[in-house]
Amino acid sequence: MSWSISRRTLRLYRSGVHPLLSILLPLLFLLSLDQLLRVLIPQASLFPRNVTPLLLAAGIEEAVVGNLLFNERASFAARVRELVLLLALCFGCLFVFLALQSGRGLRLSTALIYPMVVTLLQWLFSSAVHAGLREREVLLGALTGNTGAALRHSLRDSSFQAGLAMRVLRGIRAMVLVFQFLIVLVLVTAAVLERRPPLLCGLVVALHAIGGLLALGLLRIFEEEQLLLGSGLRVPLHLGRRRLLFAALILAASAALVAVAARNASLLPLSALIALLQKLASLLRLPDRRGMSEGLQQLLIERQRYYDTMRLPQEPTVVNPLALLFVELLRRLFTTLLGTGLFLFLAFPLLSRDFLERLHEMRPFDALRKRIKTLLGFTLRLWLRLLHWMRSRGRAGMQTADEEGQARRLPKRIGTISRRPSVRKRIQMSRVERAFLALVRWGEQSGVPFVFFYTPGEYAVRLAALVPAGAGQLDYVVEVFEEVMFSPHLVAPGRIARYFQMIRSMRRLNPAGTGAAGTSSP
Image (cartoon, rainbow, N blue to C red; front, side):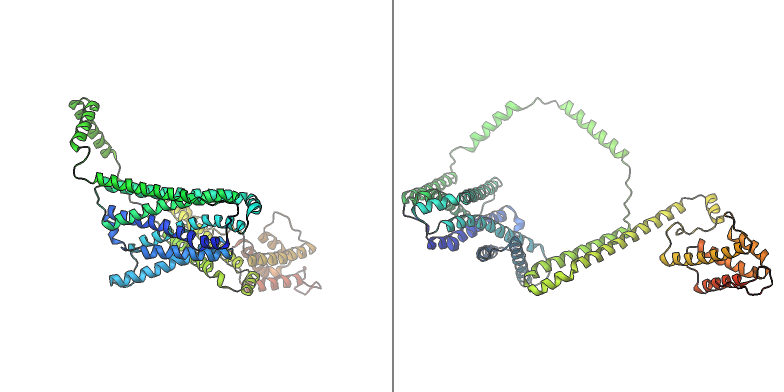
C-alpha cells in the first residue's frame, strides 16, 4: 500500500515512453504498408523510394512540439498552424530534392503527392496517440506523490479522468489491432496475386508484428496498473513475464506455420482440392439449352441495333464566353482570399499586441467586407444587365417583317423612362416645375385661369392671347418644360438659365399688352 507514482516515473512516461509509442506505432504501420504497396502496385516505383526520414521526422516533431505546446496550454489553431508549416517545409525539401535528383530543374510532379500524404498520415496518427496518452499523464500528475489513504482519495476525486484515461487506452489498443489487421489483409492480397515480397519488406512487416504485440502488452499493463493504483500495488512481475512468453509463443507458432506452408510438398495436394471443386461444380451445373441461349442473344442484338437507330445525334454544347469569364474571376478571387487567409493564419502569432489592438480599432476586415459586397453587387447588376440585353436582342431577332416595320414607325422609346431618374435629374425637374407653377399663378392673377386638363402648350396659347408681346418667350418656356419633364436626360444648364430668365421677364410684362414693366418681382 506504500507504492505511488513518483515524479521521476511521470517524467519518464511523459518524455520517453508515451512519445516513443506515438512515434513507433504509426511509423511501423506506414512503413509496412508502404513496402507492401510497392509490391502490389508496380507504379509505386515512380514515387520516392525511401520515406522513412520523412515519417521519422514528422513523428519526432509532433512529439516534441506536442509536449511544448501542452505545457503552454496551446489551442487547436496552434496545432493546425504547426501541421501547415510542417507540410510546407516537407514540400519545399522534396521539391528541391527531386529537382536535384532528376536534373530537370524545379518543376511540380506527381512524385510529390505520395510522400506528402504519408507524412500527413504519420503526423495525424502520432497526434491522435499522443493526445490520448496525455489523458493518462494528467491522471498520473494528479496522483503523483500520494500514498495510502491520500492516494485513494486522489483517485476517487479523479474518477472522471480515470475513466477517460481507460477509454483512451482501449481506443489506442483498438487502433493497434486495426493496424495489424490491415497489414494481414494486404499480405493475403499479395499472396492471392502471387506477388512475392522482398527480404526488406518481410523484415519490416515482421518488425511491425513484433512491435504491435509488445504495444498491446504494454497498454494492457497500463490498464492494470491504473486498476491497482487504488490499492497502492504494482503490476506483478510474473504477469509481465507471462505476457512476454505469450508473445514469444505467438511468434513461434507463426514461424512454424510459415515454415510448413513454404515447403514444396504440401499437406493438402492441389489435385485433391481441384477434384473436390469439380465435384461441387458438377452438382451445381444447370442443364445446357443452347437453342434458348442463342435465341436470347439474337434478340438482345436486334434490340441494341434498334436503340442505335433511334438514338438522335447530340448537338455539341456551346459554352458562353461570358460565363467562362465570370467563373475565372470567381476562381481568382477565391484563390486570392484563400492565400491571404492562409498567410494571416500563419503570421498571426508573430504580430505584437499593440499592433493587434490598433488593427482591431481600425476594423480593416469590415471595410474589406464592404468593398467585396460592393464589388459583388456591381458584378451582379452588370450580369443582370447583360442578360437583359441578350434577351432583348433575342426577342428582336424573332420578330417578323411586319412587326419590325411597325416597330420602326413607332417613336423610339428609351428603356430608362420607366426607371427612377437620377438625383440631379429629380432636382432639375423640381426647379423647373416650381418656376412653371409661379408662371401659372401669375396668369391666374392676370385673368387666365388654369384648368387641370390643359396641357402646357394650350395654357401658353391662352397666356399669349393675354400678353401678345411674350408669345415667343412662352413657346421657349413650354419647349424647355416638356423636355425637362418628359425626357430621361439632363438639359443643358444654359437652357435652364434662359428658361428662368424668360419666366421672370414674362411676369414683369403688363397684361394689357403694352410691354411696360409691372410692379411685381419674381
